[in-house]
Every structure is written in structure tokens, then in C-alpha cells.
Amino acid sequence: MVLNCCVYLVEDDEAVARSLMVLLQMKDFRVDHFASADAFLTRADQLPRGCILLDVCLPGTGGLEALRELRRRACAWPVIMMTGHAEFDVEVEAKSLGAAAILEKPFAPELLFQEVENVLGLVAAGA
Image (cartoon, rainbow, N blue to C red; front, side, top):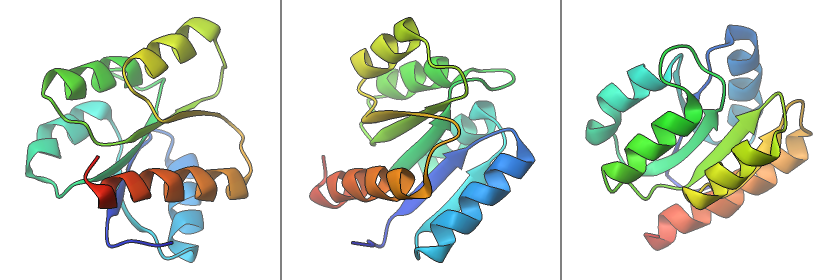
């Protein structure tokens, strides 16, 4: 199910971002990339509703801090967190802030597609 919603990719590693963008675009997802949470947060209020693929470890504002800020702004967009280092406390905090999923890098493309399709269904439903 590909919907007319955008996946906002927040990832500072250019090679990882490029790979994820190619994968998502191959499945006809629209993708908008931000190299930092700060860049995304600056524009988030002007962007059409979508889902966020958010790295935990980012320069400047980190992924968890960015998710906390989005929730403070009452932005309920679905968020999929990505991390290279699975840590229980990070997962607990991300889930408590409403993250739909936490993916540990490297993850299989099929898992990424499944999670993105799941949350885009939430975007379409207005959740």
C-alpha cells in the first residue's frame, strides 16, 4: 500500500541516507531527506503530514530529543526510530514517546518496507 504521503528521513550519514532513499523510492515511497533533526524541526511545521524515519544518534539535537520536541508541539505523526546500537533504555523512552517502531541497523529492506507501510496507514487514517 503506497499512499500519497511523504516519508521524512532524518539521517546524518550520507551513505545510509542515500541507500534508504533509493530503497524507499524503488517501492514508490516519496522521500524527503534531512541531514539533522535541527533541519527537520525548523521546517516540520510547514510540511504536509507524513511519517518520520528518525535516527537516534544525530549531531546537534538527537533523535530522542527531536521526538520529545515533536510531541511537545503536539505533532502526532508516526515515527520509526533507527539505531545502530540497540539499548533497552533508548527503546523504552522512544516507545514512551510514541515511536511506532525501533529498527536496529542494519535492517532488512523488507522490514523497513513493512514498518513504513504500517505507519503510512496511520497517516492516511489521520492518527
